[in-house]
Length: 234
Image 1 (cartoon, helix red, strand yellow):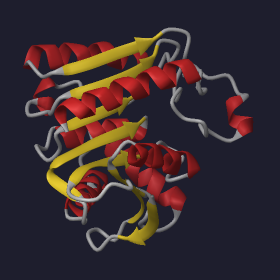
Image 2 (tube, helix red, strand yellow):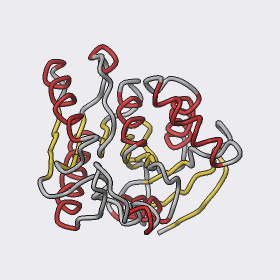
Image 3 (spheres, one colour):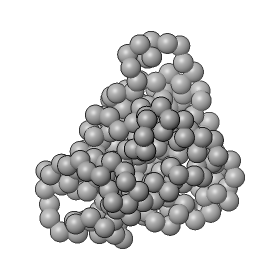
Image 4 (cartoon, helix red, strand yellow):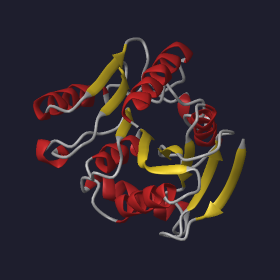
């Protein structure tokens, strides 16, 4: 396993990269982080993809200065339907990944979580990735925004009162567009159920309609679906 952190030459993004032990051109996956940035949990997820044969690249979408300012900019891009610097950074990161040694540029997927799930879906509509894993991410209201979207595997928690409804919208869009997909809503869990490091401990104690928290059974099932879906399309 080769692991490194580096600054990309495209978009000047910091990124964490995890590589599998296997050699030769193989698949790559872009890992897009939650609201809390490129933390140890996102590195863990990248490493798990690497353990399954992917060159995994997790860009830091808060690379352009003060974290609070970067967060505000990224959230503003989300409010604009994903248009803006953040999606440009995601596309640049995808291009940097595709150009890396050991990556077949025709076999690149993306996996995003919460905020990153929204950008994973939008990247999937650019025609530059073969599959997109959307984990409790926002979904555009306009079906036309997903007109060219790649195959999608998506996971949501039924207890997440903010994002659970997005699963139905995504299912409806993808079905109407005739796009291969696997969308699942997990009962008994809320937001961020795939993530160990959801938020600072004090934040998790506050009442939230999202009911965030890690769930091993749901997370492991979602991982099996993601990896199975990627093995088919990436």
